[in-house]
Image (cartoon, rainbow, N blue to C red):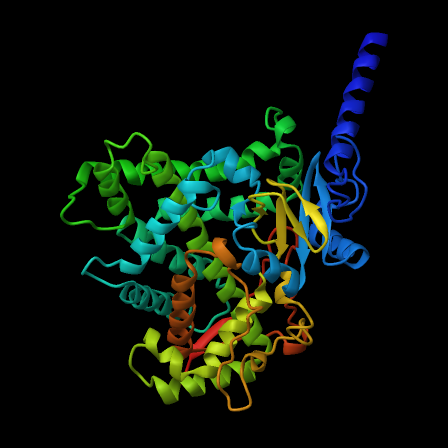
Length: 492
């Protein structure tokens, strides 16, 4: 018993020493200030898992726009507000351009793919994804045509509700997911397809796990609890199931591949794998294919559908904004299919979409970055390899950049002449080297889905506008709009 106690004390002393060393001055400089961490568990006692963002914002008030917190014994620098985030991600994009610790994706994907990779692997995967998405269609159907087609399926599903109240979540998720499915796999799914429904369920399950108490505990203590039975394994299984689905699609594409007639993203990647099969150091192999496809599939499904769901709720609360969009649709588009190029002639609609993205604030913590070298930032010493959280919610809700940030106001994106004005602080896709590769696709989807639906329908609700609450359902790693129902009645 005495020996065990002695060993435990020695371990704790070593951990205290480790924490102290990491905060030791470098050339007279320290890491940014922050709450004092406890050995082993870091700041977990000062951060309530279900109030993760609220805890970080309290630290911001106490320590300023740049502070340090500890996840276990690992320090993480948190950046708050547009000025600090811009200075790091844009002005010093190379220094802050590496990917930080992403525990759940790393556990499942082992560092392969686009989002969780670094170095040459990340450069190659990102470049290939951007090029393929930009050129997609390969002389066949463009992405715009695919979105237009899916928008018609969405219209039909709305029409089937016959003006009755319904929750739009399912339909919007199906539509957004089908676009990325078309790009990745060359096909869309029926909204009743059991396999497709399972995919959507796994995406929702993954998001809820990552924002749950168990998800945050796994982030803190993954090295210890990943071997312990518990609910976290059920949460992780959702992502493993998505990975297995992608692998099935890859295996099927291998059997039917025609290098002279590529059909989708997976085909293009497989052809690249063939071209580099003699290169033993090539990053074009099965693990990176599955990882990249999963990154695109996950991101391409959830961000667009949730932004629209948040946006529709805002239109229910502010019906005058919806009416003004419809007036612009009637004037510019009329009865024909909306086109991506219509955006330049519809400034109010474009401003509304910008406000959708700002207000919904879907990834409030941002995706973690990491420093590529020792650096001095705002008078603090940040060692190479330190994780950095650009807290995007403090950028999108920065009162200096967006006065009255909790008020939904598309006019903030219009100048005195009614022309859309660029706001550098609008960073829903992050910024710098790690900006989301699917940004252009998401913006096109938002515009075409919104205009196509409001061309045909007016969205209404029986809930008084003053009782509609835009506050997110939960607020930790993600922002999700509260559940609601609406009706879609014929416009014109």
